[in-house]
Image 1 (cartoon, helix red, strand yellow):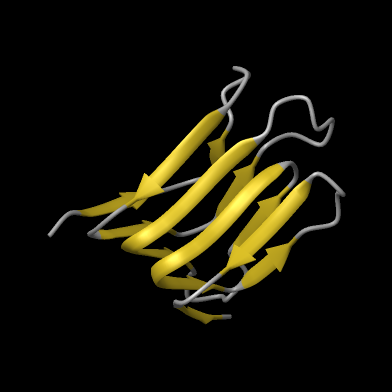
Image 2 (cartoon, one colour):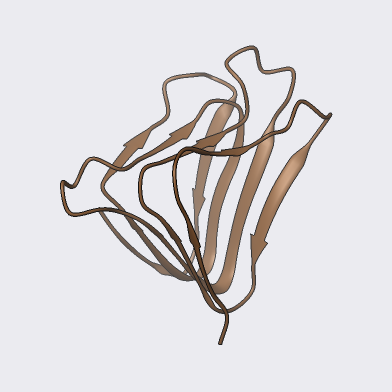
Length: 102
């Protein structure tokens, strides 16, 4: 079992052509915000959950997943978030056979 905790604002895009976070097992906890991609659509990001767990939550219930460009895909596993923001046409949520709670 792998458990990691990310504090502060986490960004899945470091300015490269494409950045990704793949979770195939274990638990990852983000206690503030997770930003996927950029607003310009030129640097997409990807978060793929297949068997792992991603928690983006805190005691104030104001932790946010912001999919600006790229994909948040929940294939199997668990996704628990306080707020989900997808306002850009370049951002996508793909939800197949898994559990999610917000």
